[in-house]
Image (cartoon, rainbow, N blue to C red; front, side, top):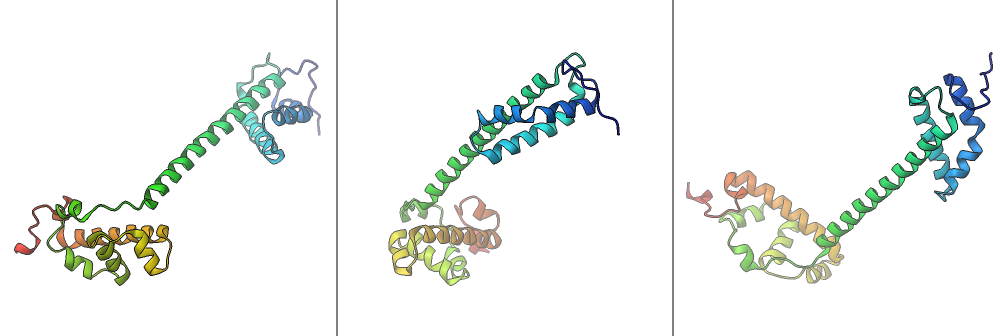
Length: 196
């Protein structure tokens, strides 16, 4: 087995010498990452990611370029990518929490708001739903009871009742689409389902 030629200036000459220079300076690279990231396991993970990138991109290393500064650029970019992905993940979590809050909102449209879009065959569609779903729709959407009151009566949390109501509405929508077709997709205005 031949040992790679050690270039006193750290200039790139071949793949083996690049890997050798990187492993030789591992502790310096870890210290660089520790100043930017506190978690020890994350430091190791980012270092491994950077080493993989370096091996994949070693063709971009000029013969006149020093391996160590080149690898520091890769490390910096890896840290920047990590923090960008964290910010993106945080934004996605914020969006998810905001949507969850909307689902938990107790505001339900009043019967007057719903009347304009009620299909004539709505009662038939509600009656073929699962009993729990039809009960929720009749009590909350048609009778105007609050989610909190219905949840208390059913001995479930308001959030659970909201999720069940959402599923019940989806099931009702699907039932209406299956029975009424195009009419239901346009809000059931001027329903012609029962005219045939």
